[in-house]
Amino acid sequence: MKTSQFILALDQGTTSSRAIIFDHNGTIKQVSQKEFKQIYPKPGWVEHDANEIWESQLQVLKDCVKEAGISDDAINAIGITNQRETTIIWNRETGKPIHNAIVWQDRRTAGYCDTLKAAGKAEMIQNKTGLVVDAYFSGTKIKWILDNVDGARALADNGKLAFGTVDSWLLWNLTGGKVHVTDVTNASRTMIYNIRELKWDNELLELLDIPASILPEVRSSSEVYGNVTTDVLGGDIPISGIAGDQQSALFGQMCTRVGMAKSTYGTGCFLMMNTGEYVVKSTNNLLSTIAWQVNGVTQYALEGSVFVGGAVIQWLRDGIGILDDASDSEAIAMEVEDNGGVYFVPALTGLGAPHWDAYARGTIIGITRGTNRAHLTRAAIESICYQVNDVVRAMEADTGRSLAELRVDGGAVANNLLLQFQADILRTGVARPTILETTALGAAYLAGLATGYWSSMDEIASQWGLDKKFEPSMEEEKARAYTAEWDRAVGRSKMWIQEEKS
Image (tube, rainbow, N blue to C red):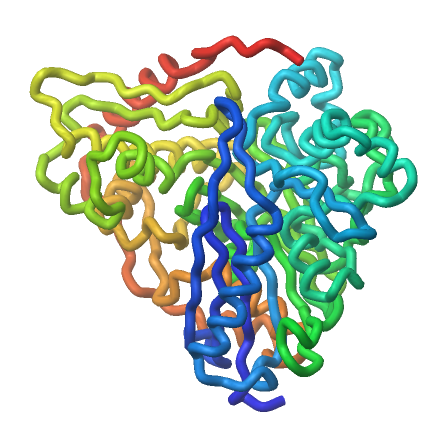
């Protein structure tokens, strides 16, 4: 193994596809990124063009290697990390999707999820999958496509369809249709995978009327799955690491010990705490999920998912036009001393953990004649912190363990105001690492471990470095007053709409 070689990480996210090349020290050599179209067929529905996902990912992969000025054979291995739960079904013979990808944010199956809960299936599903019954997960999205796309059931019955989360779709295309595989982390987000027995669950497949023939093989998070075809990159370059984006970030942050936690601030916010080799069943509306499986050892995590995190800043920019650029948000929010009594609950696609209310909707409350765009911007930034705080409190209640430190990553953590307010509300330290691209880094680490590029997890852990740690500076009484007002605002947003149950 030459230490001059590199690892290529493919980071397929909700709004863009990226490729990042890392060296042996875990530092970034090159980044390439391309946004793709968001499709909103109906209120609450969110789709992507699966072909555009693949084409954009392929383009940035090639651009990244070219712009880095390295040869293809300098790439030791490829790791994949991806937006989770997003559901793609394609024809095995043609390789073409039979419908747009249904994105994790999509709420079209909320009514069916209510039907499952009313039928008393929630506890059984949680016991097997670690998940709450919600439209967020892949299972009901698979059922919707099979039930609503003409001819889909017949094709599935004849073994001609393949389902995959985005990792499987990329792997299929990277290998020229030779490999139909997912890893345990992505499988654990489908609501049809038994995280205790580590297999697709026949009872759940029967419940959702999903044929097993469409499912990918489930493998570990760090092993060689196959090689890329020569029209992608030259040489026999292995694809050897896969993890859903949040698990990948947990690994990239080196939260490898029980009780260590991270929060990723991207389109949504996702907080995960390592619970070791045991499934901790949540009694506070969190998710039990697989953190990763490496060297035959499966580790688990508790997770709280916030649907709208950084996306609330995008909405200020694109939805109502009070920001020219998302990066302006910190400076504009600093124009005022506080939120002026304004609270923004960004339930733009419902509320995730720990509320799980598909019928909540965005609420801005406390507006007066004196309210200006700085107050709204500050309230939006603070809303991200309040939502993370809600998840942390639920996590502490589930584990009986106080959070000693929160490691953070994602695009929004460049915002110092956000991280200081987060520390103030949490009443604990918030640690920002030197390398913020921890999602892609986790995928790179998983890929490099499988090929021997890195010798061990201990070697990787030694590379984690601290950029800045934010400590609470606000008086605790004031912080509690803020969170009490936030709780009131959340109460106003809940059950706002009544959708027709289907």
